[in-house]
Length: 158
Image (tube, rainbow, N blue to C red; front, top):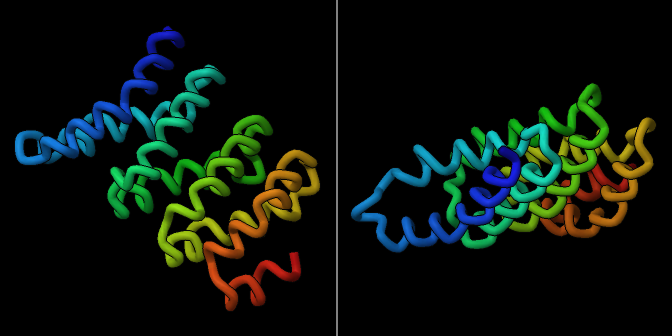
C-alpha cells in the first residue's frame, strides 16, 4: 500500500538516529534492514513513495548516517541507473535533482568519479528541458563540490 510505504519512509530517519545512538546494541540494523528499504523505494512505482524515499535519503545524508561504502555501492548506482539516457523521464528528473542535492554532502572524490560524468551528460540532455534546467540551477553547487580543477576541465565547456 503506497500510504504505508510513504509513512515508513517518513519514520526511517528517526529510527536511524535512534539506532546510531544505540549502536552497541544494534551495530548493523540500519545497514542490513533499513538502508535496503530506502534504496528500493527510490525506484518505487508510486510517485509519493519515491518522494518520501528521496527525502529520507537526504535527511540520512545530512545527518551523516550513511556509510561512504553504502553511498558508493548502493545509492549512487541506483541514481545513475535512474538518470541514464534510456530511463523514464520522470525518474530522470527526480534522479538529477537528488544527485545535485547530494553533491554537497559527499566527498569530492565520490562526486567527481561517480556523479560528475553523468551530471555532464545531463547538462546536454537534448530530450528534457527540465533536466537541463535542474543542472543549470545547481551548476554552482556541483562546481563547488568538485573543485576548481574539475570545474575548469569538465564543467566550463558545458
